[in-house]
Structures are given as structure tokens and as C-alpha cells.
Length: 110
Figure 1 (cartoon, rainbow, N blue to C red):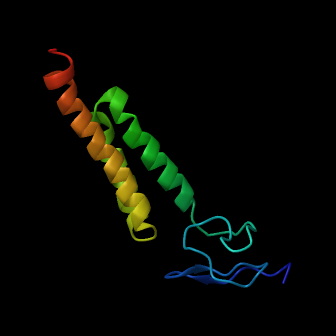
Figure 2: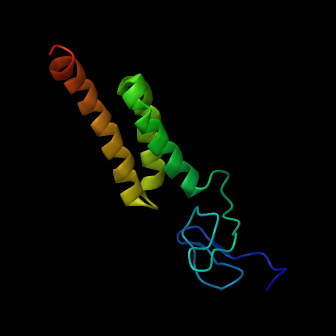
């Protein structure tokens, strides 16, 4: 199996060449054995997850008006493959909105 191309299934993911188990679609490594897998996508699922979380967290420094659309787009791209990650990105984004509402109304006037 070492020289063969991994099988691809658009709905479920790639078959790992090392352990012959199905991987998560968009992932660049096997979650069973850790072997690198070519997912066929230019940006891996992990990059959308990390990028969306960082962009949403930058809302604490740059206001959620600037970081809102990129964070929501990352959550949208991740949602069908990893809903919990999308919910995490949205939770961070919503907490930045709450922070920017509380900061000028409660913290700064006091």
C-alpha cells in the first residue's frame, strides 16, 4: 500500500494509506494512527478552525465589527465537518460583542 494513492470519497473523507481507516474530510492527518494524508483540499480543516478562533479572538483588540465577517465565514466553512468547532468560533465572537458592550457602559464610566 505504500506507493498507492489514497482513495477519496467526497462525503466522508480519505482512506488512510497506513491503517486503511476512514479519516475526517478536510483533515491532513489520520485521526487513528497520525499518518499524514493528502486530503485534496488546499486549506485543511485545522487551519479553518485555528484561523477562525484567532480571528474571532482579535475582536477583543480590534472590535467585532472588523473581525466579524471573517470569523463567521470560518465558522461556516467548518460547520459541516466539525460543528463543535464552529460553535466555539461563534462563542468567542459573541463574547467579544458582549465585551465591547460592557466595556464602554460599565467598566469605563466607573
